[in-house]
Picture (cartoon, helix red, strand yellow):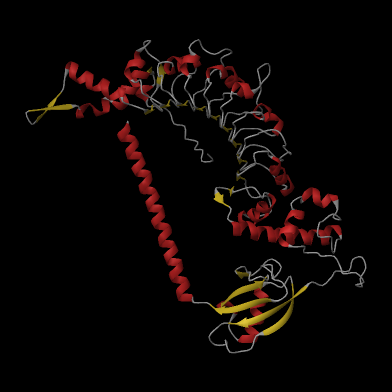
Length: 507
């Protein structure tokens, strides 16, 4: 749903400038271009059909059409009343973008004859406002599920005026229409007007506040809201609005504070998929690592699934960053495990911290009773670990017991192991093994050189194993993964091509 394409605007062909009826444009594109291929076989010979036989063949071709694009085909009118009902009764998808009409009456005159129509694209037609729905609007849009009004300048109040004629509408696209807010004055609530609306796309408009979206708050079925490329700078707490919203795009909005992301947790549904540009001052990966811990129920961020490992790693980093913030900005050197003694100002900006402390441990545990030290004294946090070599050249060397700071990074650990066992840091592959008792042993590869022992949840009694990297095996595995990825891409392209061919055959 985030893959909106804004097509380029080019002038229509000079030969079409005067405009033509829907039927004329349809025949010109789907029949006349194939006229030379209209033959019949008699006595083993191809014979060109003429007269009534040829006309019947053309009529049959149009009557089978289901998906029709008359984009830039200079459609300017519906033509004689009733003509389309017999000519092309099976059309379900229709693209009339960049046509030569500006009145809703022409649209409804066309669509009222297409009884199976479910999807309509009117993009790049400057449609004049209609204070009341055209007379035949109810018949025109009775089965319509998808309406595309991108780059038409159509405002929300115009759609509201047509609401009674759109009882089945599920998807509404209004990108690049210069919309600043959704007006709904004097009309019933949107929940009554659009009870089945599931997706609203307002990409590249001028919406600056969430209050401007008030008509959408009570839509009972709204599951996807696309607000990319607007002017939203903050996200308010939402408790009882948007009851079904699970997918939200806020890409390319001027959101500058990570604290604003916390409000996304208040959506009642809850939110499962999100598109969000990197917060200023961060790169894409770093911004992702800062967003994931704040949204524990989120499953997909920027079209990429959040794996269990990614979530756990991001949460551990977040806990460490919060601990640094508490020390540097709030003067907190230690706190209770339930976080009940933390400053309210900190909890207001980092509300997920207490839950993550329960999950991953307290990075600033309370000082034991009777231990010396006053305010401002930082308690030294260390962990006792066993260093063991599993490399062929040093496997017989004795293991070492070391007491290391929790903020001891993997790159420092590699340098220490190099001094102990002689294997260059670049050739090392480290694994942490932590025994939790009861036969439960966590085995964690230490893959991030800048991660520390706390980040990898290494505790007293843990073992750090140093293995020698198998560069040949790594290269072979990388080549295998690349080949598998290329194979998947080729298969996806083939599947997409097969689907297109099946769709063409069905038409």
